[in-house]
Image 1 (cartoon, rainbow, N blue to C red):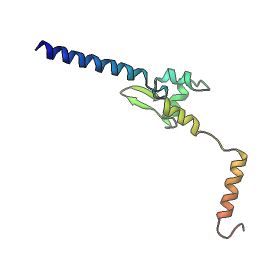
Image 2: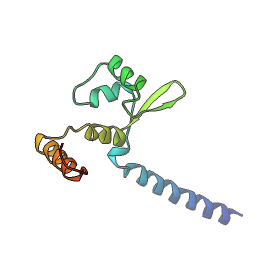
Image 3: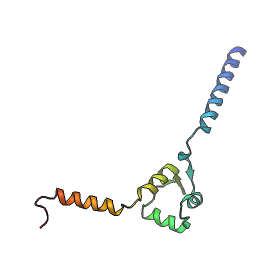
Image 4: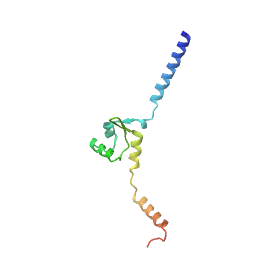
Length: 107
């Protein structure tokens, strides 16, 4: 019996070391922000009321756990990148492609 207990304790200790090693290896992009941390992280440092407005309009990705709002860093980064506006050259290329693909051409 003592040998079996010692064996199990050894296995549990190995599992604990593996778990603590994997916790430190989590990528930075999987970090959770609360509202205050999000306001500090965003480039223009918006006020809390502004972020609440974005949440109400469903413009920003968020998660709600009970009464607590949480934001995933990877989703916020993707949201920031996704708000890119097209350059003049990109808009002209899109317009030329649209005209070229339109049946009958310009009228």
